[in-house]
Length: 551
RNA sequence: GCGGUCGUAGCUCAAUUGGAUAGAGCAACAGGCUACGAACUUGUAGGUUGGGGGUUCGAGUCCCUCCGACCGCACCA
View 1: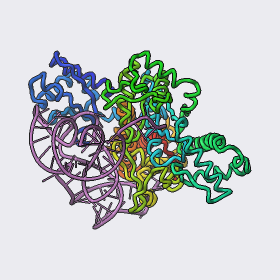
View 2: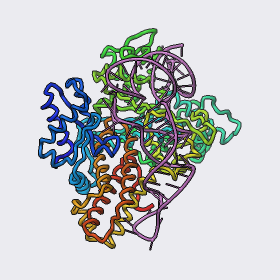
View 3: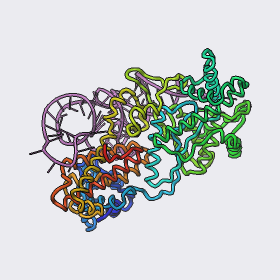
View 4: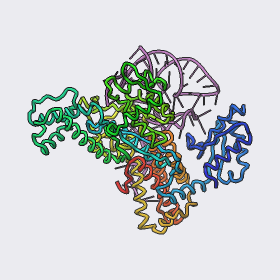
């Protein structure tokens, strides 16, 4: 019995024997429709030019040649060239072995061998000027799921969050908290126009009054604002970290931008670029030659007055990221697409072209019923991530956000989300898991012998029913799916896969009774159930979603 | 005005990056439990993939051009 990779190698060899000049790549994938077969390859299309033949004829010749090999015939039950594709039906033993593999490997099933590639993922990062909002929910879900999937696929992943605590918005935050504090003593005290008007600073002001009393009324205003900015920043960052943790997202590093400043990293970064010759002086300012990488115009790095711009922070921070990773991925909102060229310019300057990769996560339009909500913090009207967690729960929220591909804008209707949360496909998947758990609980009472045999992976050769084999086939997709999620940075495929496994299980459950009078059948089906439960649980874990034993 | 992203079933979204007959869920309609969980399942209906051109064996996917939505166009962050 060959593995899928070995089978692909056999077919590639057959093709190479027929057309020695060609360099055929054979990859077996699930066909578009199950009726075509178990796996398929489109290798014939790629050979059409070299062979100067119709893909269908090429496919036929490859099939004939490959079937000369008895080991191929031992694995393949049926090989059909159709419309240029080569469709294979594999023998039941092939799928039985998949189930055995899952039972043997358990939670490690589908793990990729270490790729040796170190990847930095930065996602979710927000200004420390207010609570996390729905948009971050989307980025956190997608970023964290990608991180988990990439780790499973064998990448060495480092996750980080940048705290933007070095710019002028911190001053605005300080003045905002100062105003909230003063308002506790004098409700008429004016709130700054460019301040952060949400209510979330009021509890912090109250805490401040409790702790320090009137202290800040008597301090100099500038001194008070500077101190309060620091206090507000710390409070808000702590709250953001707590909400992220509740959302089951853990970071390897929360990097403070201010710390980079204080450590002199900004100056060092600029000096490094100057040495690399990509900076120049004009109008008293220092510019980055980003047009070399296709940017519309060059960008200022150091202002006329000597203060570094935001880009200078990025220069320093991204250099640090480059030190700990081969590949650096940033999740950015669509309003940041202008960054891509600037990062390209940096990567080129550092001699690591293409090392920076940007994933644009499209906008979320927020609705409450028919009313479209602005998400600007300055407008003070925000739906926080905590609010969403409270309303629909972490499982439903994470699964919902991961389901959508990043390049699709999303309309999030909070009312609808609440109303439809019971329709969330996450419950369909979780139900599948709980249903299996229930069967296994029952088996412990009535079929203890078969259950322990099944756990040891015995008796799987009794699996033959189409529904059983279809389910096993789906389990075999797990590894390739995770690898594809990692490679294409497409975590939404994981939720799609979870639904497919659950669907295949429910169909199997409908067609085949697990606990029967026939010991062999029961053992085989229990083994399939345990394997399915493992794959469902692992898939859900990669999505950051619970796999419940009961619901 | 210039640049970017997007437009797929009534609704929310897929389509493994140029491959087969564009698929799921929800909503609608018609069926299925005296056996392991009906939060399940079987089926029906629903499409000129925004419009039009082009590239090739083959286009939802690539190119051009209109239409529409959103986002950028700071010595802000």
